[in-house]
Amino acid sequence: MIKKGLKMIASITGGLILFTAISGIVFVNFSPELGAKPNKKQTEDRAKTSHYKEGKFLNQEPTKTNFSLKDTWNFFKKKMANKAIVEPKNEIEVVKLSKNMFKNTPDSLQRITWLGHSTTLIEIDGKTIITDPMFSSSPSPIPGVVGKRFSKEMPITIEDLPEIDIVLISHDHYDHLDRKTIKELDRKTKKYIMPLGVDAHLTKWGINPNKIEVLDWSQSTLYANIKFSCTPGQHFSGCGLKSCNTLWCSWVIQAPSAKLFFSGDSGYGPHFKTIGKQYGPFDLALIECGQYDESFSQIHMMPEESVQAAIDIKTKLMLPIHWGSFALSLHDWNDPVIRAKKAANSLDLELTTPRIGESIYLNTAKLPKDIWWLN
Ligand SMILES: [Zn+2]
Image (cartoon, rainbow, N blue to C red; front, top):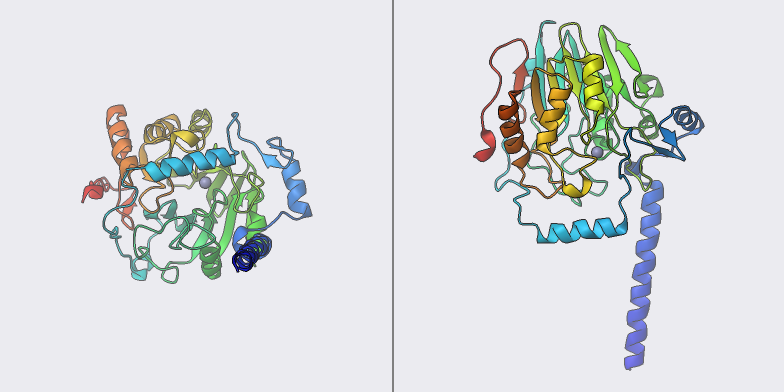
């Protein structure tokens, strides 16, 4: 009897393992959420660049981008023992936007609206740009696995957004490139600009390749009278099993009336000073500030480093992004902005801290500076 019972448990366990393994293989190979492998042309484009070696893109400085099972286990243990308040107690209330605000706007408008995490809507010189659009509630191929958005809603729905001239993408991590968002946004998008290799995902998702332009570090492209330059970041990439087989970058946006910098994700490195020398000064820098940890300090900045990066690129004003929407690391949810504000005060850098959904107007003296994250 006992023998029969053990046999049954063994066959159920075996069946479950087999089912999980088959589901895993099917998911990895067929789930569109996991992006795509590059085609022949895309592989050839990558091979041409000096920072692509043995199937992987490399950072300018030696950087640890491979995380072993041991690293993952150590992070998990740290997470289990973590006492930080990684999510706000109450849901964050966003500033709601209406589609009417985009009607009949003058070309002189210089409005930048933070929509949460690294998504910002930039209206400048009559053109509309959106950075790393991510409107889903969870930055994961399986919803809910990697935490949920701190707010129930986005400040605006994709439907109510205006026509988008440029969707500007920094890299293919889920919190920056979201299939559902891209598919919904596509009908109002005129053009996509992204770093090498990321186009493989979009074309797999059905986006017209003629709407996509890919750039390598130090290349530029012009859209109307706005110049977009692809500049380095110090990070990694990957939304499937392979990491670093697409490029990551930061962006310089040179419009006739203002110059902006969008950091994407990056650790602190000498590339910021180089960007400052080549393209600075800037009127505004959108700089990642959040989701850091000592164990991956080379690929995400501590808040003090984010402020130093802003000083290195020579910006007049910094808007901290990549915080306030998801808990992807182990720090208090509002620690990034508290520390960035302190560092900016001591180094005399002007920081603007809009609520999620609140706009800043570059050509006005009044910038959002409320300390809303303590409420
Ligand atoms: Zn990333």
